Length: 163
Image: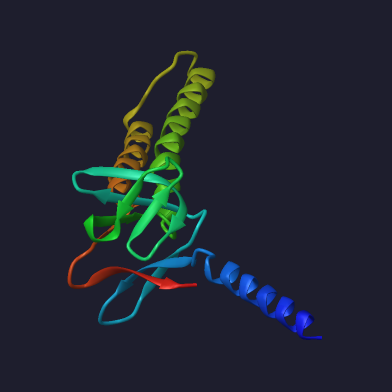
């Protein structure tokens, strides 16, 4: 009887050591300090950030309490990341910056073909050129708004919490 108790006790110790030795998973949180707005990053999420003077964009493999390991097998310290770039929720600007110029070119092409069929010669007239150029200009103006930058300072902070 005592032998079974000793064996089960040793088995419990090994199981506990195995459970304690497991690496703890963390969640990376970008949050606004006074309001509490936050964005969560976990393993296999895409992240884009500025580290010193260079911008890195990759998939997160592992998050520890003080660093992030990316798919490119590089590890970055959290306290040295200066800016986080996000494109989530900005699909109007992402799609608009490409679709408006394409719509302008298609409009100009179709109106020119229509003029060629009705008049016998292709003409690009001002009434058709102005809207197509305006659509292209709107797409160009939308380009800077595709990505939102969050500078890590007094308002935004990057923290890790156990998940």
